[in-house]
Image (cartoon, rainbow, N blue to C red; front, side, top):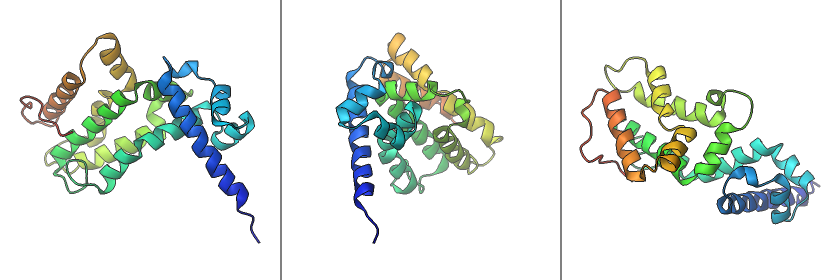
Length: 202
C-alpha cells in the first residue's frame, strides 16, 4: 500500500513556505533582504526542506510568482472579455499588456527580483516565453499586422520589471499615467488611433 503522508506533508510544507515568503517579501524593502533561512524559519521548516521543494532561491521566486499570477492566467485562458479568448484581437492585446503592467506594479519587488535572478537571458525564462507566445498568437489574428514575433517582444519590453520600477519608483509616474501611456503606445504600434483618456479595462 502506498504511503501518502509524506506527499501530504510536502504539499503542506510547500504552502507554508510560499505563504511565509509572500509575507516576508511584502514586509521588506527588497527581496534581497529576505534570506532562505528567514523564509524557512517563518515557515517552520528546515532549510533542507525548502531547498528540496524549490531547488534554489530563483526557484522559490518563480514558484511564488506563479502563485500570484494564477488569477490572471485563469482570466486569460478561460475568462470573459477583455482578457478571455473571445475578445477581439486588438482589444485583447491592449488588455493583456495592461494586465501584465498592473501585475508588475502590484508585485514590483518580486517581479524585479525574478527578472534579475539567474545568469541566463530573461527572454528565455518560462514566464516570458509564455507571455510572448500568447501575445504573438493574438497579434497574428490582426489583419495586416506584419512580424508578430518582433512586435510581441517590443510591446512586452514596455512592461519589463526594471522599467516599471524606474518609472513608478524613481520617476514617480502614477499607475493611471503608466497604463495610459502603455495603452497609447500599443495602439500606435498596432496602427490604431491613440486612446483618448486611456480607456483601459480594469
